[in-house]
Image (cartoon, rainbow, N blue to C red; front, side):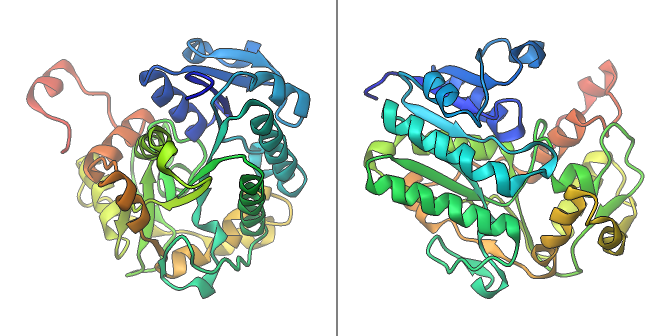
Length: 333
């Protein structure tokens, strides 16, 4: 790469930003991270080069990106607040910084770009007519990156299903199905019986992005890819994996209380976002990874049992194994 192996990660304290930081470092990259208060980033992030600054300030982003070959744009407004006001200006700042430094932008994408009219089998060129506010913003983000590509700013977008993983942050798995730091007594499932749902294990997402970055010289200036991740065809595979990890095959499954969201949605931004995305649990929408396979040959893929076990262990939902347990029991494969 022309500018050397220097990457700027925006959103390094979050799920995908943190995972990408670790993956980049493991590949020998020097990783910079921008934060409004570097004194609060925590001891676990001391291996990164932390820079004081705000993703809403263009001069801060441009300064942090100077000499970088890569900008991972994984920053989001905290608590789903002020999305319409903050998301697009932050992306514009990353585009400006990439234009100045010659860096490639990597953006974690989602299925939110697609509305119910896109069908159930999605490819990168499927029509994007989102019905939600967040989906419309996602579409506009990608439009701006495509426009920037016409002016010489390269970008890679990887759209994936609902995140889960040991350090995945806010997501449906940890905020819907289980309760972190509590023993598993039940699973709350948001989907309808028999309806498929797409999941993505965060370390696999980061590895997929990394492999695309390593092949970027062979990619178009504006590249979009879908991950297959873990496709749960009828909603039972994730439930079964959680039961296996807990060693409780009779763990009860409860329906998600969608009716509770409606009265609180106007006052709780998170509930409003969850309510808007309900259609993804009512019809099986699957993103196909044909284009990704054409480039990588195979998609990075951790077996579901292993991924769920690691996620639940990190979230404090499983008993801490004793030394005898570790000697006599292997991790799920």
